Length: 396
Ligand code: AMP
Image (tube, rainbow, N blue to C red; front, side, top):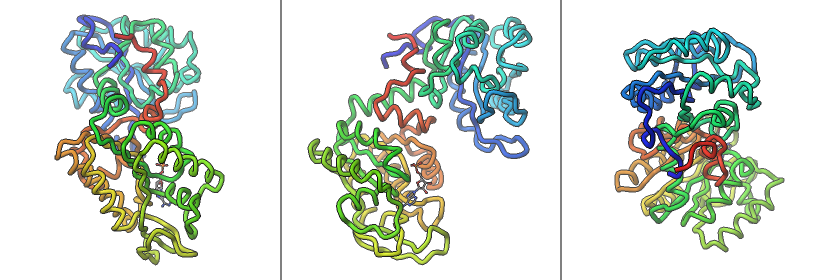
């Protein structure tokens, strides 16, 4: 990694401001329903505790739109972190202001203070320099460990780095190492699997990956825009008619770059996108009145063979409407194929909330090399974009 991380500097006894991703789902009783993001920050926090640091954590939760919203308080995260670490975690009443500054100043080595939701202030997302400076004034060093937010230039991702020496935490480093190696120096064959609803949302990823992968597998609804662009009938499947030219350009570019570009060769179709719908397996073209909702068995086998040959495999986006169990077969098959490929020594990387949910549904989460914690950030990384929260960290 080209950026300095927390192991590259002496952090002994330092007062450290750490941007973490505690944007966890809460139920109506304010219970955390999935604590993955909090657990993912533990290596960095434990390392800083070992170094006798005074630790000030900052994060956002939900979309409070620049004002305090009690249901979006980070208090449940403070409590949960305390349980995970078996230590006290202090909670600040705000992320800036006199009371917060007093609590930060009074911190002792190995003490942890969690600041209240950064996005209670509109200045956070506006990357306001005074707000960033006030945040920075709480500490001597800044550590970025919230991969899920580094694609945004906010006060706590970019602004603050102007006032403090800034380094990557372990979670961020892991994300950059996995995604960076896949793009820059992948073990080959490099196979990418893209699915989901729309070409428009993934076109920049497709374009960037076409210059890097050996094989690109396409599933999900974007399939039908590619098929229609080739004059194949798609019935009532989801199609982006304004992206047909874009689809043609992608197909031409894949040919030019000699990428093996595989589209589904059969489909599960349904008369409506609902559980209990009338379904049927069909070949390449979709009958009138029917909707493509998943890849078919021949496609599962075809994609499975390509995945088996892969040494680096990146997956983003489901192969069908996997939220409905009857349409989840293709997506779950891909999840299992990735787990099997990992066992055979391939490096497997999954990004995007739906694919992450699919591997969880298949029960193979622990069998994947790297599951990215940032959906939007991992997509922008795969697009080859400069992510402001990474660019702002100190170079090696
Ligand atoms: P994205 O956010 O672009 O990754 O899209 C994810 C969504 O695409 C999921 O909610 C899926 O239900 C949806 N999706 C996948 N395949 C299809 C399909 N064949 N028809 C309609 N929606 C689909």
